Length: 129
Image (cartoon, rainbow, N blue to C red; front, side, top):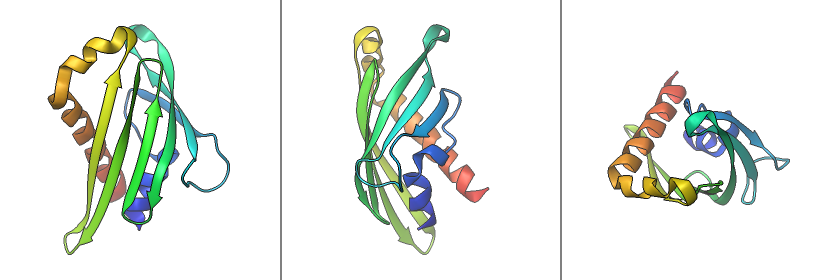
């Protein structure tokens, strides 16, 4: 339950250097349809905004979000399973880049896997204190 609540509360997470701020823009507790605005650091000293929406929330095992910004869109599906060794968190992320960022699509699977691994390692560090 603790891990699920952490993943669900998007605006309470530490997101790394590229994310400057995450603000929940929908009142009330997180649920399907809850929206967030994320301010991110972009190349060349620019900033941009991403919109994030919870599209699936089935506590304590599944959470899906979709995101969209000026040069990218996609989604993340989280699945949590409990066991004797603790909670296992799996993330399946899809990203498509558009406009001037389109060449990032060519970076492929390895770059995306590294990004997801850093995010999950950050989650683990935050949860374990």
